[in-house]
Structure formats: structure tokens, C-alpha cells
Length: 406
Image (cartoon, rainbow, N blue to C red):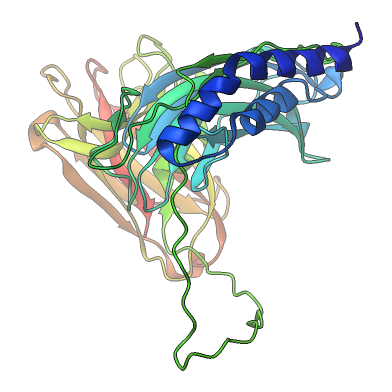
């Protein structure tokens, strides 16, 4: 049987099984996105042409850590022939298999051949949203085409608002209805896509807890004041709004991290003696409080060891300082403290220190702040966050809290 015929038969079989469920769900919930449309989207995405095999493929996606508005992933890639030509893109989808807006992603360097890439997904919109999964794809930067993808289940309630809501957490996928609103279960989709370059074949989607979520009832739009119909509006020229804050926590996965032992991978293991950097999201620190956007940077495991992250950023014209909280993870008793250095310059070689500060566990969470030279405002710069161990590096579990250019 030809692949196209297999696709049609597969969709028909799924509709035969789940068609009655669709009718029941729509009758109970007042209508929603038809399950037939959802399944068509699932299958269409699963059998989409996977592109040129010589660029590589996404082999596996693992969720490493979840916080209120940040999820960290580990993405295994294989056969990457030209790391400079490819990038990773993340799309988060809801129970109706629709891409959710408001998400941004960043990732560490993509290796040649086989390897792992640390990816951070950040939600920046105002409203809370619930996801059931995400898709990570390799994109050809020359054509902007996603040619290899892999999905992972991600039942998660993302907190909206500045920095994300603190109430977000693991979704139980239980009914959330109240009053006269019917309860509903999301559609959880798991798909194993074809290898890059393989002949597209019917992929079998697994549908768990199938119900079609209720669509909100559109609000009636009354006529404008005066009771007359308004003429179509004329769109003016859009004005690009320049950001006034650079979130270094969200940009950390794209920074270049090094230690005395050489280049480091973002999202390293805690036992790596070369040093490591990890995005912890929300974390309880040595002052007993839970802080947001916590970035851990441990210097190389040696006397006077160091770790540094170089960020290639554009300083907003109104920004005057780089600032962060600084401290340690809980239960640090043997660290002799670290020296924190922040440098900025048009190039790494021309950078000058704007912060040089000793921080010890007994200090709690301290303020780290340095003035940005006026000539750097509105310019492309290299900003470096550096941590230097003292006579020993024992328990130098140093963290940056909400580092940013403001």
C-alpha cells in the first residue's frame, strides 16, 4: 500500500474509533475544535517531509526542570554536518494541538555530529496558560524551514505576568470546571517522527483522555457610540518598541561559558569538575526564601578556579546598570566565599570591570550592581559574568538571581 493510502486509512480508523467521543464531548461542552481537525493536524505534522538528511536530526527531547514560567530541556541531536547552518526552534501546544503564543526559547551551541543541546523555554505573556506538549525542531537558517522535529509531553500550567506567576506547577490533567462550566480533559499527543531522509510513513499518534476542550463563547460586539457603523480602520505604520531590559537569565543558554578547563555546555552536571552552569528557575536559597530566575554558576573544582559567561547583547539606550542578586544554595557551610566580577566592553578583550565584589555564604543574598558607561548605551557589547573561587572551591554553589541589564 502506498504511503498516502496508509495515511488516509489511518485517519479513517482513528475517526471511526474516536468519532462518537467527539460527538459526546461537543454535546457536553457546547462545541469545541472538532476532533477530526485535530487528528488531521497530528497526522499531517507527523508525516510532513523531514528534509535533507545531510543536515542532521532531532533524536530525543527530555524535560530537565520545570518552574513557574521556565522549562529547561535537553535535546539530543544526531548527524549534524554544519552546526553554523542550523538552529533549534520550540513550539508549545495546547490540548487542541494549537501552538500557544507568548513563548520564547534559547539554546546552547549545537555540536557537530552527535551530542546534546541545553534549551530553555520561557513564557512571557500575561495570562496563565496550560500546555500538554511541545515540539522541538531543527531549522535550516538559510531557508527557515523546520526539517526534523521531535515532540515531548509537557502537561504544565504556565504562570503569566512579569517573570511568570508563582502559582504555576505540574498539571494533574484533572477536571478544572466549576459551576455550570463542564469539566474537560486535554488531548495528550505523543508522536515518534520518521528519521531524516526516511520515506514518510504513517506514524501512529497515541491519543490519551480524548476530549475536545470547550471554546470560549465570542462576546457580542455592539455598534460604536452614536449607533452608526464605523468605517474600516486604517492601519498606520508600526513603530518598533525597543526593549528597556535585557533578561540575562533567559539569555544564559546562548552565552559562551568557559572555565579554567575550557568551553562548558550550558546545563551541565553538578559533578562536573570543570565547573558548570545551570538554570534553576524558582529555587530556595541560603536566606531561606524562594527566588525567581536563579542561575547557578560553579567555578572549576580547583583552588582559585573560575567560571565565566560571555553574553553578546545590545544595551538598551535607556539602560544604566547591570544588576542581580547574588548568594548561595542552602546548606553551604564550607565555602570560603567567591569573588564576583562583571565586565562590559565592545569586545571581550576591551572589557572593563564594573563590578568586583566578594560574596560569602553568611552574607545571605546581596545586591550586585554596576553602572554601564554612557558610551555603551545603545551599542552591541560583550557582557561577562564571572565567578572566581577563593583558596578552595569547596561548596562554591554560587547563584545569580534575576540578572539583567536595566
